[in-house]
Length: 250
Length: 191
Length: 191
Image 1 (cartoon, each protein chain N blue to C red):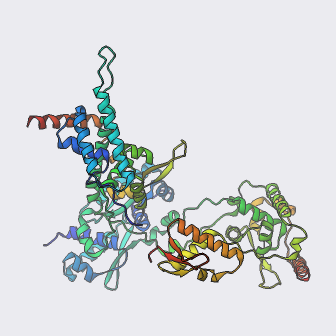
Image 2 (cartoon, each protein chain N blue to C red):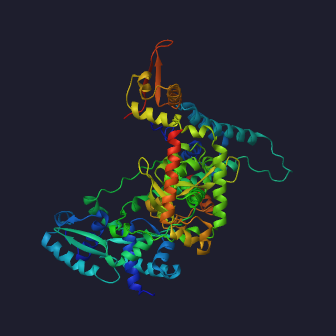
Image 3 (tube, chains in turn green, purple, cyan):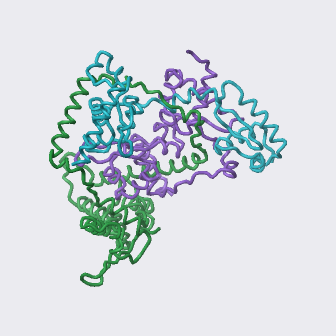
C-alpha cells in the first residue's frame, strides 16, 4: 500500500496544532485568545491549503466552525446579573492545553528513545540439551476430576450425534468425497498464482478444476479480489475473454 | 533446598542470558524456588553489580520482568560488528499518538482522536505494526471499541522501566504549564 | 586511543553478548583496536573472572574464536523455565475422542473420524502424548491402519476399581476385535 502522507498540511499535525502555532506566532495569551483575530488567520490558512483529502480537510473545517461559533458567542451581550457565565473559549483552551501537554511529552519521549536504542538485546540462545528436554506429563493430572461416568456420558452423546447425522441406508453406500471449495482459499490461490502478472485470461484459472462448482467459486473469488482491489478486470465485449491484471507487486 | 545467594545470582544470569527476552519475575521465582520479594532484593543487588566498569551488559527491569542488554556506552564499538536492529522512524504524528497512548492507557481510538483533533487510524495501525502499542482489551460500551496500551517493546525502545518512569506530565502538570505559558506570554509581552 | 583494560573487558562482554555466536579474535581485535596478543591476555583473564560462582555464563574459546554461553550447571534451572509445565487440559474434543477410544477400542483413526465427523489427528496425537491412548496393533487392511486403545495410565487415572466398567483389552481380545474389524471391512467391500 502506498503510504499516505501524514496529516501534514504544510507542517501541521491537525487543527489544534495549527491553532497552537498561530497563538505562538502572534504571541497571544492562550487564556485570552483574541478569537476574532485567530479565527480570521485560521480561516486564511485553511483557505490556502491545497488538500485533496476531504477527510483531512473536514477536520480543519470542523475547527473553523468551532471558532466561528465561539466568536459568535463572544459577541452576544453579557448578562451582568446572572452568575458568571463560562467563557465560550474555555473548552477550546482546555483542549489546546491538553494537546500541548502530549506534544511536549512526545518530545521528551523522543529524547529518551535516542538514548535507549543504543542498548542491544540478544536473541534467545537456549542450549539444545535444555530445548530438547521432554516434559513428563502425568496422565492422572490431565484426567483430573473427570469420572468414568462423565466419560461414558460424553461417549453416549457423541454416538447419539453420529446416529442423528448418519442416514442408515445411504451410509452403506460408502463415502463420496465432497470437495469443499471455499472462496477465501480460492482467492488466496489466485492471488499467489497471478501475483505480479498482467493480462491473465480467466480461462487459465479454470484449469485446476472444471466442475460447475469450481468455476462458480473461481468467478466469485475474482469478483471479490476485484472489490478489495487486488486485481483489475477487463472484458472487451459481452462474452469476451475476461482479462485479469494483478495489482500486487511481486 | 536453599541455594546460596551467589549461586542464585549465577542462575539468574544464566536464565536471562539464555532466554534473551524479558523474563517475568513470577517465572523466575517459580524456576528458582525463591519467593518474589527475596528474588527482587537479589536482582536489585545484581543490577548494581552489573554497573561495574568491566561489565558490558546491564540488567534492566521492564515492568514486572527482567532482561539483559548491552550498556549504551558500547553502542559505537558494537555497531562496528553487529547489525543493530533497524530503528523505526517515528514521525511527529506517530510520536504524538504514542505519547497519548502511553499516558492515557488504556485508551480507545476515539479518545485519542478527540485529543489530537484528527483521525488517527493510520498512526495507530503503524504503531501496532511496530509493536509499540497493542490491543489490551475492549471497552464495555457500544461497539466494544478496542482499548490500546503500550507494549514491552515500547518500554525497551524508550528505556522506560515502568510506566511510572514516564516524564511527569500528569493532568496536575497542566497547572504548571498554565503558569509557564502565562510567564512566557508576560515575558514576550514585555519584550 | 588506549582504553583501560576494564573498559575493554566490558566491551568484549558487550560484543560477545550481542553477537551470540563465536567471534573470531581477528574481528575483536579490529573492532577494539587492540593487538591480538594483548587481547588474548585480557580475554584469558576474563575467562577466569567468569568462573566466579555468581556468574551464570562462561566465556569459551573455540579455535580462534570466542563465545559466551550458559554454564552447564544451570541447565536444570533453565530447563524448569523453558519447559515450564503448560497447563494440560482435556478439551471437549480430547474428551470426545478419548471416550470413543475407550468404548470402541481397538479403533482406527478413520473410524474415530467417521464417528465424530471431523478430523481427529490432533486430538489423537495429544492423547498419545499424554499417554492416555496408545497403538495396540494394526488393522489387517489396506494401509495397515493403527489401532488405538486406552493405556494402563488411562485406567490408573480413572481409578483401578473402575477397570471392569470398561472393555479390557487382552491380546486375545485384540484378535477378536481384529476379526470383527475384518468382517466389517469385508461387509463394506461387498456392499
